[in-house]
Every structure is written in C-alpha cells, then in structure tokens.
Length: 596
Image 1 (cartoon, rainbow, N blue to C red):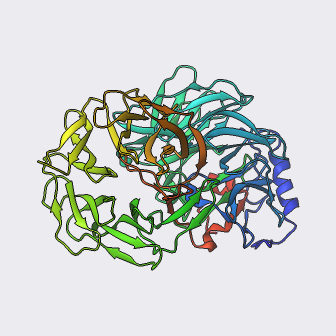
Image 2 (cartoon, rainbow, N blue to C red; image 1 turned 90 degrees about the vertical axis):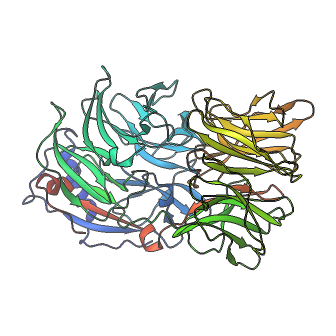
Image 3 (cartoon, rainbow, N blue to C red; image 1 turned 90 degrees about the horizontal axis):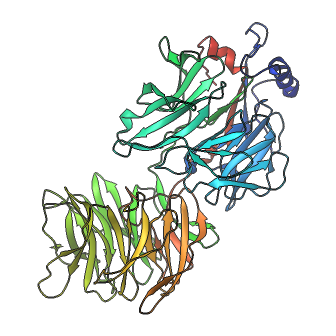
C-alpha cells in the first residue's frame, strides 16, 4: 500500500516531536506557536482491495491519544473489521477478533480500543489479544472512555446514555430520553474534569437537536447550542460541532460551561451522515484525521445477505428504495422509490428490468397476492389520508380501492390463502392499531388490536394461523405472536426489544430486527405457539423501517438469504482516503480555516 504525502518525510520524527511537546498533560497542552512548529498535512490512501465502511453512518475513525496510531473500520471483500496503522507508515494490520466492528474509540492511555459488534460493547488490546464483552448495545450511537475508567455509551438509537466499567459489569442509565420530544441521546464525551458529560440530544424535529452538558454528580443540564449535532470539546477551549458537513468551533469556558464569541467554520467538506455523526477524530496533542467529501445516503440498492452475513449487491440502478417485498416465486421484488412522488415499482431478478406499477399520488408498502397476480399498496391518490388499494402486477387492469377511512392506513401482510389483508391504521386517540380486511363476503374491515399502545408490523404466518406483530406496551417495542383471527392469547418472542417480524416459509423460523441486529427464532406451533430463544444472525448498517411501522426487508423462499436495503458506498476515491493534519490545535486557536 502506498501513501500519498503532501509533506516531506521523515514524518515519524515530526509526530514524535509533537508528542514530546504534549506528553506532560492532555488538558493543559504546552503547544508550540505556529512560528515554532509548522502545521503540515498529508493523505493516507487505503489499498485498492480495502475501503472505509462509511455506510455505517457512525464514525469510522479513531486516533490514539498520542496521535501516532489510526484505527478505522474497513472492509475487504465481505469482511468488516478494525484495522490499525501508524500514521507515518504504509501498512495497516487487521485487529483480530473485531469482525463486524463499528465505532472504534481509544482508552485514555491508548492501550485499548473500544468498539461495537454483534449487539455488544466490546474492547480489545491495541496490540491484539482477547476481546472482552462489556455491555449490550444493539444499535449504538457513540461512546467515550472517561478518565475514571468507565465508558459512557448510547446503546441504541432511541435510548438515553448508559455507563459501564471498562472492566465489565452491570451498566447503569445516565440520561433518560424525553419521548415526547426526543428520539435519543448520542455521541457522548466526558470532559477533562471527569464530571461533565457532553452529548447530542436528537430531537424529533432535527432543527431542534441540542448540544447539552450535564453534571454526572447532580444531573443538572445546560443547553449549549441548538440545531446542530456531534458536539466535541477541544483542549484549545473550543466547542466543536457539525453543521451540514462543516466543522464549526466556538470558544467554550470549562469553568462556567458557557460559550463566548461567535462560532466560525474551521473545516469544510467533512463527511457527515443523516444521523449526525461526522467522520473525523483528533488526538490529545493536535493531530487531526478526517474523511473529506459528501455522503449521499439516498443512493440505495438491494442486497442478498446470507445467514453468515455475507453480502451480494444486486445490479440495480441507484434509487431511494423502500418497502421491498418479494413475489411468491422469489423472482421479482416490489419496491417503492421516489420519483417526484412515491410510486411502486417491480424489479425482475432475471431480466434486470425495473418497471413502474403506480403513477398517481403517494404510493407505498406494496405486498403481493399469494399467486403473484396482484399487488396491494397504500396510497393517498383519492386525496386525504392513505388507504389500501390493489392493482394487477402486470398493470393490465384498473386500480381498485379496498378501504375508505379518514385515518391513515399502511399495509403490512396478505394471508397465504388470499382471504385476508392486515394493515395498521392510525387513530388520533389510540395511535397505531392493527386492522384486518376480509377479501370475501362484505369485505368489511375491523380492528384486531386497538389499544393505547402502539401496534404495527403485523405479519401472517405461512399457514395463516398466527399473526406476528410489534407493540410498545412494555415501554419499548417487542415482538409478539397471537392466534389469528381470535387474538385471544399472545406470546412475547423478543427478549430485550424488537420489531419488523418476518416469517420464513419453512414453517419453523421467523426473523425480527432489534435496532441493527437481525435475530432468528425457531418455533413449533400446534395448539400453542412454542418459540425458542432468539439468536443473533447478523447485523449491519442496513436501512431500517420508518418509525418501526413495518418490515423493511424480506426473506427468500428457501430461507437462506435475506433481502436487505443498503445505502451504497461512496465513489471509491472517497472511501479509500483519509486526510491528516499535524499541529491542528494551532490553527484552531487562531481560528484559521484548513484548506487541505
């Protein structure tokens, strides 16, 4: 592997000089002035067979506290793991035991790397060794290793922050989400005083996202800035945050926890995801590493993922795909994507033809009839809220309206005997309720579950005797199974959260998702439903459902492959390059912009 340099070697001695300058302490750095230590920049280029896993949307870079080592999430072929390299050398080495790793971060002494994989928070010695599991974390959104040797982390997308000893043990809640306003707390950082926590409160209205500081002793909080994300404290006395791909800085006083002066942009063109993370990392002595460019997360494709997590991308045009559902024979998929308004299309795996099925209004949540001749979907084509319609899959007949309601409806399943459609309807008083539409007789729909809890994602079992669905009746979404149509019993299937249930056609298994994890459950069903313990199948940055309402994936007829939605990786020129800046703190202190 070659490294493209914009400076003259020997780099190692330059980095070493900066390290010596900063070794006396990270919080009061004796940084030399620009006249004493020139700032320098260069690029790191990954080998042609390897690239950064930017579609994860989490930060993929971590610089060691001394600025000498760079750890990153890389993929070579189908394997994703952590790699480490000295920033002044041309070779990277995989870190054993980190398969599927995400979001790396260093311990304060640089001896360990924390990361997330297989729904757990883990750590591994930087030089290699045994991996240690620390806590559950099914859908992580950040972590920070504090000076007291505890780790504060966001275990999932819709939770508060938790704290666990770096030696392992029970984790404890540190912050609690206000579910009326917030979606979750993300990207924690413990400030140098060891008692102040900095984090992003992610609001249901992204314009109201907040950077917050909180006392770990008293729980007292203070909002610093609104409408931005990914707050970080710089030892230069600045609050750093991400704003539309620009890294901003504003003076921040640690004593009063107050901002002063005006924010300025210090670095443009830094890759940032829709969930708020920005792809950069800096060391305690002022080495900066970042990924340049703009990441277009609306470019998606479909991919087959086998039971080992190996990925095979489909040769499809880039589109904003959603709601993929396989035809009964597994030869086609119905999918929604937006061209002006949302419409339903089908894709033929053999001919590789993409064909538009609907044309009027907003149309989504397609589902095939058992014989593949028709596709039902939700649409607002009549004006007002979305109701349920059906059309022939070859578009030879008219669109037929199946339901009429003043409330919004979304289709979730069609029974294997063709006699029932199940969907959820949003009621102003009870929220999402599960309804069923008989397709014989009077065809009068009626509610199956109408409670104050939120129910969604109802799916018929292959034999039509059971209905799997998700509900938040316990305070978080869990997966349940009830007999259909009686719904007089229920079995809780998931163990610590779950949604998006999908049945395999073999009559022995079904899947569900828990944040970024795919879980599988074996079952038998005679008079009663008997489910085994859910097992982890794979995880990854696959596109999830919009608001846990329906399943956003499907399983092949033979049950061996799962059809997942993926955000496409960037152009390889963006996923193989990391920019590095030395002595960055001097530029930050003088508010000089970096033009690299």
